[in-house]
Length: 164
Length: 164
Image 1 (tube, rainbow over the protein chains, first blue to last red):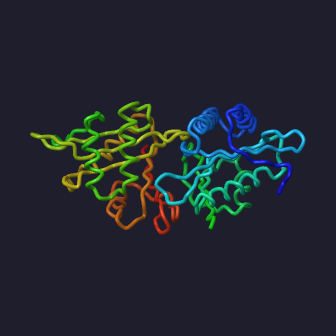
Image 2 (cartoon, rainbow over the protein chains, first blue to last red; image 1 turned 30 degrees about the vertical axis):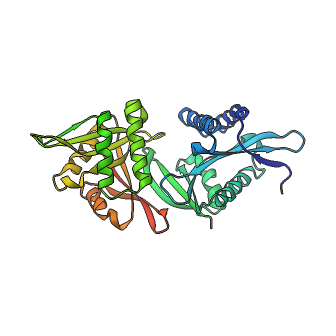
């Protein structure tokens, strides 16, 4: 067990820290940031019934602070397939294994909930290169590519991992 | 112009006919049928702002009856990519070109709204073979396959057509 990291459920007070992290990561445009906060609001209002399950990670022994979060949920009309909608680490707390810790937590939760596969959609844009390597290091394989999905020249990549 | 076919916007009274057609097509399970009707309800309540745009087709010169519908909408976070969520033809009115008429109508509408690509997700299940051939005949290409997506042995197929 990692004593510096603690994962807990989403609380309403987390909204502003989540906004800070999504903005300061520099990876997301305004519409994407708005989408992330809409998911936070739905999850706060409706809980897991919203389909968006959040895990937030606090880092630090003496003065723990919210340093990352993940959002995942079951994909409707599938048997046991989950989507990892968001995984974000505070850029001020990189290289501490927070991303991997969150990802492994989500995988365990998905298995506990009866899931058998986790999908992650991402962009082929150059700026996401580190993200793509992170998924590959953690056992994810490129399952599909939709050319020019986000914009001309910016494909959608779907990574997958069979969990059982 | 085809004088036997008329496409119009969704009206609240169409809900029961849409339910009848989705059920009688025999292609959809209970959860999928429920999902279709939720989209109808959202579209009736919120209009195009729901993200689900319906086109319903009436067939017959003297006694027109609702014989098919399509539901499509812009995919969030993309520039000009649309998803065809549903296209259903009353099994009692097959072989009249209703599916193709609806599909071409949707393509024209998507272009009018500034769209550049239309995606259609479907299942690899044997029972959808005729549907897949219908997409291929109309210029759609298999863009991606996610193995075991719906269930083990039942893949998700994504067909795409560039519209401009």
